[in-house]
Length: 366
Image 1 (cartoon, one colour):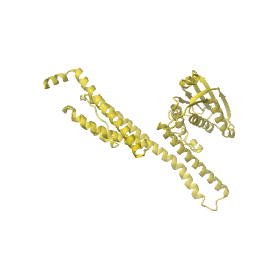
Image 2 (spheres, one colour):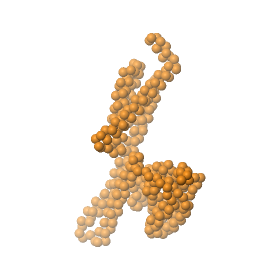
Image 3 (spheres, one colour):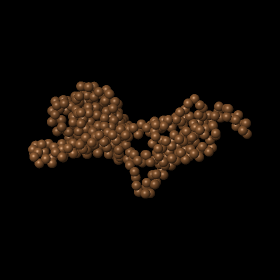
Image 4 (cartoon, one colour):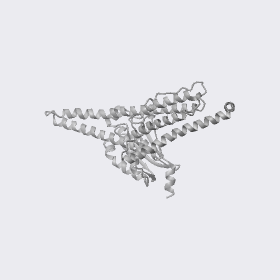
């Protein structure tokens, strides 16, 4: 029997079959671990009446999933031949380190014949790289939030201490109170945008699309911003074709308000803003073009990232947090649309939002 087994092991088709079975087994264990943990923890949360936030829910599920996979791999090791025991131990050690938060772990493939484990090694390395990138993004996010919160808090604290001076002139007191109020509003907006982003990314945000006149929505929002562009003597050229859209009206209003406010904010006194809405090839296309300072090529690639500011000094002066365009992009993607920007330094910027043809087909069918 052993001779027959050894003879079969020399056959290529047999080796391929073994590899396929091993890969399916381990992938099934990995999938089963995550699935069991996901439904198990969900049931547990319902039973105890407590639900962690989205981040900690992911961390808990990841940790328990890895622990369960580790236990399953220990069982599998009992049935693995002596030739693969060392590799299995390396895999187990790697999973243990990842479970403890060491995402720098990497398994070496080398020149040896890893058999059915080679694909698993590559997958674990890939998973570790992605988890490491997520951890870096998390740390950067915490750092950015801390920085954005610290700045207005420092201003509020400093001016509040200054107001204790009873001999302070009334004009200065009024100015300090105005700054405190402005910084408080900035903190409130930062908190509100962070909550909105977290809600949208958790896929638990209420999404209520309906059919409505997009040109009317845009017109009313432009009029709502009239005091801002009149104050700066900005010429507003608006050309909106009559068009219906199927979308979440409240969410889309945040998109338009952000884009219109940014255009006004970065357009100098006496500048011009062009806004248009067209139906092109079955897709709704919204464009807003300003004559502001423009955006560099480097910044265009990063402008939709959280907390990124193409002009940090001006953004801070205007009270921006760098979250607005991230929120805009997330909402547009939620509607299966896309947003792009064209700009060069000194020549203003043009933002274009395209809503997909599918939505318009649904409208035409109503």
